[in-house]
Image 1 (cartoon, rainbow, N blue to C red):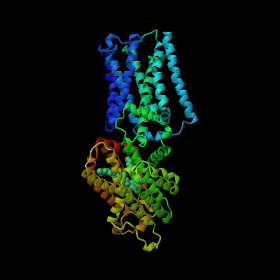
Image 2 (image 1 turned 120 degrees about the vertical axis):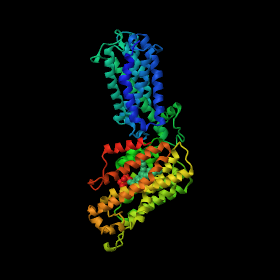
Image 3 (image 1 turned 135 degrees about the horizontal axis):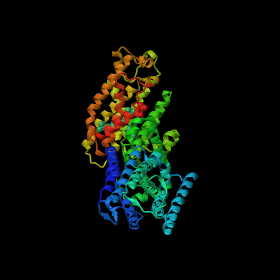
Image 4 (image 1 turned 90 degrees about the vertical axis):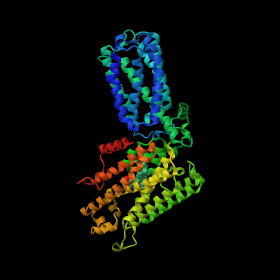
Length: 594
Ligand SMILES: CC(C)=CCC/C(C)=C/CC/C(C)=C/CC/C(C)=C/[C@@H]1[C@@H](COP(=O)(O)OP(=O)(O)O)[C@]1(C)CC/C=C(\C)CC/C=C(\C)CCC=C(C)C
């Protein structure tokens, strides 16, 4: 009996497991735990008989003075633990690296392109050929035996996973696939070199090629660790592929349990991709691209959400962004009014029919969108989950946009021109319309998707506080954008405040960098933080599954306000930017608040 192998775990495999767990702890959800348990079970069941065969054939052995003693099918307990801990570590690294990735946007309904078809066939050929070569090497029974056992064992698993998910796997960024294979593989190569040198486990001669990748690392060992990490990551990708199909297509899979059964996962993978619906995939992809390009705060926050809630928040953002841009990008007021009219008619149609309660829009709504809106904005309207949202806040949002049009007012001479935000009350009403409504819509999605039970009274209280929080965010938005808004003729600082500082809205348009305006910006931010403090306790009352992600969304945005309040802070190109490190620190803190 000895502790050498146990010490390898204590020194080299358990510390990274603890570090990765601590790093991922605030993001852990039940689906992650299910994924880990699923992968570990498969790894255990598939490796045990193979490893047992290797030990009994004496391809590798464990000196008695290196292991504690208990075995299962001749495999020492430490080795059994290795199956578990390696799978756990690689899985956690994959989960961390894949957190920012929005997997449904990598789905494709199109048939694989020529290049992808070639890769699919080539992969199948390679994995099938390695299986056959492996069998041949085992049959020969000489120095190629260990190599043969590895590739004959791994080939069928790799072939199956590649056949099911190769197109999805290739579409993912390398940081999600290659990196979680490469890092643990290199690490285990180093650990293995040390263990082999110390004699913790021994590869017997006669069944190995005797080729070393570097001094002390047999080529078979190097291949073994590479292959096992490849299989773990392929398995995780196939899992995420299946989950993406289940979540992205409510028409095909109306009710998806939080922990889908293996049968359901396989059923998803085998679904004919022509049934996906190209429009939905494009809409999801455009929504994510829009979010990524236009809002760093909400993009970061979106990665903390999971499941269908994440998809629907992205689709809601996409609609809000498109509607806002259609109106903001008009140079003539009449054009902007026309867009508001069209958006209103779209809502009238969408909510008139009983199909508003269904995932897919009524054909009339569909054709109204295609006939009246630019191609680039159509998917955002088609995919807005109206069946989950009440119409009040959506009309309220359009009402808010109407205020923006009042800045255009060209009927007055410059001297007589009045600005729509005359006093603080006007400001609050405006902010409630453009942002309080958005908060209500976000919360409706949360209530729909949560697994926790919330009473009507609780929902009403949360919606009230959420509306206040929306106002706080909008004040930060206005404080940030004073210069950029002035450049398009808008002044959201109340005229009454300006008057108190001896200014008129026109002065802001002419010189938004006037130091007197900094005082008013500070006043607006004080108001924002006052409302934030008042609404913040409600965050702790949100359903548990949305609490931390909502905190990330709110805190990431309020951080813009904190940066603006820093002494001597200078706006860059008229805007405040929060450095990425600070953003991540804010998100991390918010996640840990629970
Ligand atoms: C995580 C995720 C994907 C969230 C999506 C949130 C969402 C749907 C945002 C819509 C954004 C949008 C384009 C709205 C149009 C009106 C508008 C411009 C509102 C302002 C947003 C500014 O975004 P951005 O900086 O990207 O825009 P500009 O560059 O200035 O054009 C707003 C500041 C409003 C945002 C308000 C919210 C997201 C509501 C926040 C409150 C909650 C989530 C509720 C919190 C709950 C409790 C109980 C306190």
